[in-house]
Image 1 (cartoon, rainbow, N blue to C red):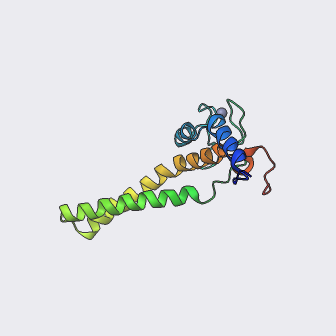
Image 2: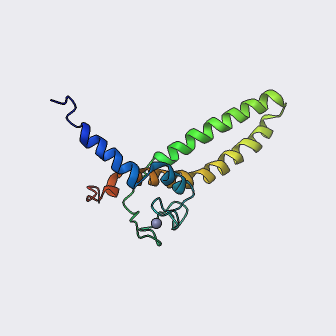
Image 3: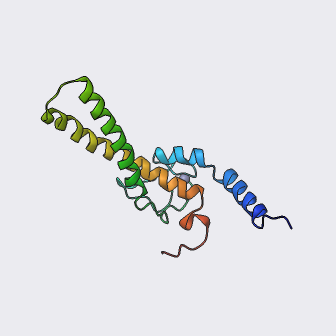
Length: 143
Ligand SMILES: [Zn+2]
């Protein structure tokens, strides 16, 4: 009769997600490598190893499935930035290929290493906010 069989459920689900776990603050906390729930506890116990649970609020983090998204985002951002900077520098300054290699290769490596952890934190926060994987409260079928 309504024409939208899942309309009310979808609206309730979106409202619950928007109020319980707002995406914007969660992403900012994840980018700062902090717990997406409280923003206080550390999200990583090593460079890319996430904690089992937040040491401040107890939110379980272990069931995230960041997988390949953080490296993909890192390559996407660094690639576009470095290629644009390389092309701009090549137009403005005359340098040898060795000089370009000496500048852009280390910059690419450093920028990739600097972005990978925050982007993994943001990916975990995205999954937490959207209740993906085990963050929805149900048993993760991959565990
Ligand atoms: Zn926390």
